[in-house]
Length: 147
Length: 147
DNA sequence: ATGCCTGCAAAATATTTGCATGTAA
DNA sequence: TTACATGCAAATATTTTGCAGGCAT
Figure 1 (cartoon, rainbow over the protein chains, first blue to last red):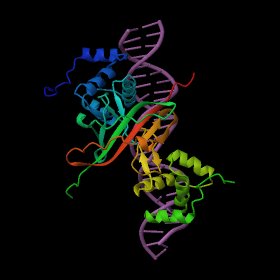
Figure 2 (figure 1 turned 120 degrees about the horizontal axis):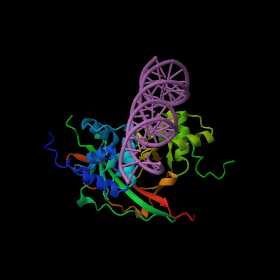
Figure 3 (figure 1 turned 180 degrees about the horizontal axis):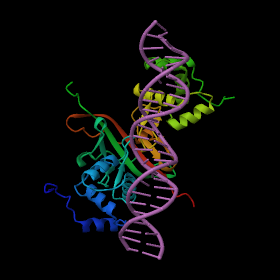
Figure 4 (figure 1 turned 90 degrees about the vertical axis):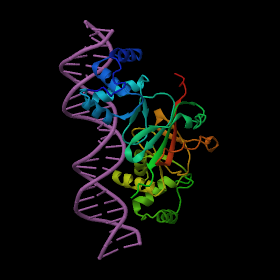
């Protein structure tokens, strides 16, 4: 029935290995959420969206568990947290260094294409501090909607 | 008693003018909060901090009003919202284009010094969108605390 | 006078936590 | 078997909202 879903069929074994390599016990919720998250290329997703997708895909997990899982995944480097908004948090399955567009009215995150990644390096940290990361979020608005 | 507070003495008239120019009615809460926010140079401050300072300075305002005021100030360009954290929101009294350091463990925001502001321009927006702003937040950690 | 503003409490939202139960190693 | 994970509900935290009364123009 899901023949048109390219990578959702990542084998269970692959997911198990990936979780184990990250030092995580491959439990049912983790495996099923990993399939949702990593089964179809890079994604930007909120907990709310994960919850909806899980429900749609007959993946039974509590909200608290989704939070536990994505937070754990983030700790071990399987996900990257993207802070774009005071409210909702997004998680990015692409953990490599790159920047983001954020479409305000759609609450949607998009990657800045690699060609434009030249957005400089982090400025030198003040004395006594070290840089642990840089978040660049370019906020977008849909242009003049005909109205 | 407060002889060592350089600009806190911004005259009420100046504050009134500033609010009026921004199209805001100069009410007591707005005037008093404006004095806290703009009376001593550039600041990065959270609502919680404003609340504390207000209490300390005998400025009586409800929490809801603080939110109303900073949100209104932000709308009219008197403040700039800085989104550094999924949780708390910070407001910057320096509304010109510049970037920020965020010290994670201290929940503190610092300006990136002007010399290092070369952190590039925003990448071109995708078709159909326009750039409305760019937030660059460099996350810092205090370096190896002797322990 | 009129409309915008304030204060309070309650609501809405997002995320975390405590604890009993379940399960991977 | 033992430590770690899950599920549920309640707790926490932040911000917004509804509404009655107040104040600037």
